[in-house]
Image (cartoon, rainbow, N blue to C red; front, side, top):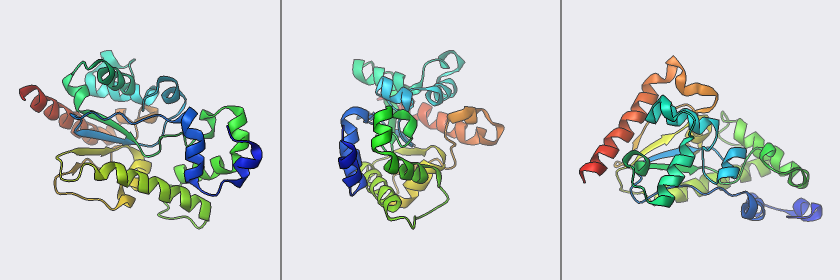
Length: 229
């Protein structure tokens, strides 16, 4: 891990990502059959532990709604990862892709105490970018550098699906903002708007039932096509 002096000398967020990724990166999970792509924020403690996006409480909420209450104790990320690793070919899981805007944690709590000390200034700015979703840009140059890097990275990920019939599901204001900032659009893409992040049981709220129903329907329709094929 970087020394205090090295951490202080870092000039860009790309440097931060390069230094932290060996220990703290959680990869996206997208199969060739994945057509329903969830766009999420960043990994946290459970995601680091299991090496998959939405591997904690938020993922459990997603599983409950997509697969039924009997799956409420099995976070979606762990199910998607197991399906991919074992080549199980379960239709709904095989249609789901999980993409984080940032593949290292944006929250300081996910890091060990030494890393939090070494990268305290950067982690503070990372959290500002994570939480200030009403801002299209930042006057602070380092915060803007973080945002620019995240936008460019997400754009690169999504450009690989140009012309493909996919459903994008940005979950929460952070993911929705960054998808918007990529400036990407494609007539072949379907975007389910205003889906909340599944944290704090938000998918259970009456306000969001239409969006959650649209997500479930998209996955079921895609799975049916896979089964027919």
